[in-house]
Figure 1 (cartoon, rainbow, N blue to C red):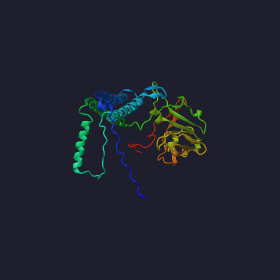
Figure 2 (cartoon, helix red, strand yellow; figure 1 turned 180 degrees about the vertical axis):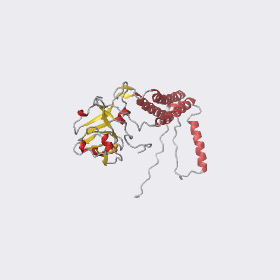
Figure 3 (cartoon, rainbow, N blue to C red; figure 1 turned 135 degrees about the horizontal axis):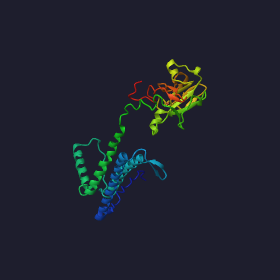
Figure 4 (spheres, rainbow, N blue to C red; figure 1 turned 90 degrees about the horizontal axis):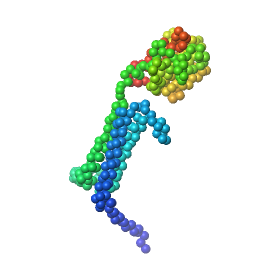
Length: 330
Ligand code: FES
């Protein structure tokens, strides 16, 4: 008995089944309209993106079921871009499944580099494919696809606008000016030296002027920590000592490493600790860095009191608060 294995017979390809649009011109026309509608929905998505970007203010919130209060500007931009790309995809898939050529093709393996005649053959086949896809015969699809693809490229260009404007001097300045009252955060109450016990810590912000509103940007730059020590515990030079008041010293709360809130104070060691990457600052030595990746002390705010005994800023910060940035001088 022969031990040779019998090769499996090639089952061949199943019989080709024509799609409805291949044999019914009405179905083909209907499919063409469906593809055009999908591409047009993509264009609507892009227009929603453009409208949201330019005309919906970024502080407008709307209620959306399940999501709750949502920023309308960001929602419009996100939804617009998602719809724009999604419906181009839906349209292309529907087009391919209903109208593009539907025949099995066998591609034999060959060398990776194509021969010149193969390349010209490719160009010829591509042209034939475009012809068979009906781009010439189906102007509705052609136009709606051109509009959808053309518009879909716009968001990438429009988003470049968010790279500007240049920050100017805004990174060097805060709302702390000479004479600005320190107020509690939260609560916005003016604070006196007697409100803070030795060993105590308080977060303060600059008092708001009449009609002024505090923005998130303000909070990100202006937050200041007040810490009260015994005056004898300071190891400061004469100038920095004159920036304190009755043992109260004020530092920017924004970490000089990467801008986290320096939120932990160890009363026994008099160290301020940033929870993000553990930079540690010595309060007694003008927030000198004693551990961690930060390269600079926390900026100290010079403070004093006004005629009524309320704590005020003696002068603005003398250096930029927060992390390094390109234009920073120190
Ligand atoms: Fe504070 Fe990195 S942000 S240590």
